[in-house]
Length: 300
DNA sequence: AAGTGTCAAGCATTA
DNA sequence: TAATGCTTGACACTT
Image 1: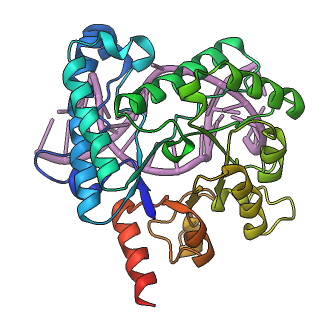
Image 2: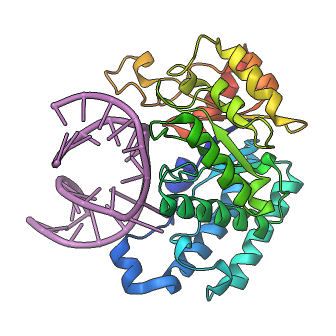
């Protein structure tokens, strides 16, 4: 399967727009509080259902949902929201649709989620973030499996990789069973950070799979080809089909873009990667990029 | 209505 | 020591 992340441009451009990332800034949260978050969450979850229906109709069965689905969820329990019952009902419909249409849904908490941080506060906030993502998947009644993954980075070293790996594993141990069973860890995009072989070693003995990001491997290859690196991660998924990320740098396509910027639309997805994993296409053109890549591949 | 600066949370790197 | 990139979109205020 091929998939895309977060925003569906076709649906966003409808009137009224269909989108799952209605959010607010701090001043608004302080003014209007969880009651407004509840309104936004209900609209977001209902639009998630609409997005999933659109995806199924277009045979796009892999989707990463935004972490803004329930805005400011670190500040309240989902069950305390005034619209909780309606949100739960809408989430159940999402889960049922996902199972009926054999789709795959994942999450990717934001960059500040640092389970291996050397700050206890940051670790606590990070554990909390993974937990509320897991709550959302529970609300949808989806299996507690990395198939419906919550994907994070270690994303830092704090000057000591071994100690960071150890803190990360400790944080994993502190997660609830439902959150732990869904966690996946992705290779970083900078030479000094966490490469595929380092992650595989650091997570050895846990059940946490390593998610292979093709573009990021460019920055942390450690002498491994893309295929060799993917093979190392594939072994960490057990019986679950691996999820991977694929993108091409915008620079490949001409522009004098920043090195890590994604191309609007990749030229191709390697056949071996498609055969052996569900591939999340990270590209500016979102769902249109996936359709273009899929059609190009099918035609050839 | 359109344009612009800014945005809860973290880190590494560069200036 | 302080800005900046990360990556990209949308909020929220100004015009």
